[in-house]
Amino acid sequence: MEQLKHTWILGMLAILAMAGACTKTQKHAYHVQGDTVHVNNEYCAVSGTKLKKEDMGRWTSTVIYQGKKLVFNQCCEMCIGQFPSLWENHTDEILQKHGLIH
Image 1: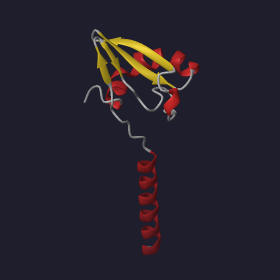
Image 2 (image 1 turned 90 degrees about the vertical axis):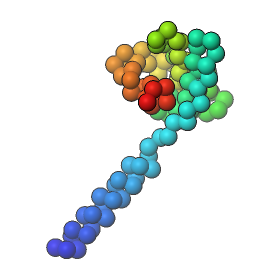
Image 3 (image 1 turned 30 degrees about the horizontal axis):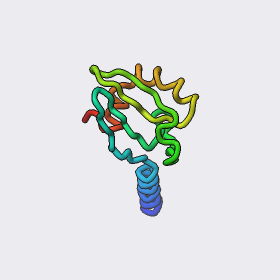
């Protein structure tokens, strides 16, 4: 019984470690230019796909938030189409994920 308990604990620790390793860390390097904030997100704001350096700024979505124009990088046209709905339903989470609010 003790061996089973020990195995279960080790298994849970392994799952938690893997979950932490899979978490994408966002680098917050936004750039403010007048009333426009270029978020410069390195992961697609919709799918979470890592963006290639050469694709940064290729596909973007723009929203107005508190009088500022926020420009988010996307990975493709499909994500550009999905972003407005995501923004409408999860504004605070998106802003927090990209370091725009705490």
